[in-house]
Image (cartoon, rainbow, N blue to C red):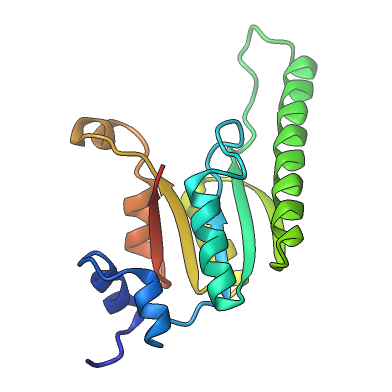
Length: 174
């Protein structure tokens, strides 16, 4: 079997060959992992995405970058006090930052090098920018199962990243 490129490795993963098999056979080297946290409220240290990331990081002695992308700041609605709006946004960002720091410490306590990042902007562009800046070898995303109507009307993060990313992306069912 010819060693697959990143794009071929992604195709193989979809054909029931696991990432672990690719790693153990030497087809995929993962030194830097970018784990995405979409919702700090619903994520815990026992979330499937965290568990899978820890498994891979332990197997490969990888560094883990944890990223959560907060939406870009916008103007408050006309009927909301702008100072109150800014305070609420700051409170939410502080809460998200605290969770990311907690997760970073938890991973570090497992003897895995980890760094938490709180980015702001659009999800796809922030993940692409950070994955390139950090020389990431694998991006790990949580993925809910939704039907075609939901995907047509709502978030297209997965498809956008697949189309634009230069490194493999692993989806973890959550």
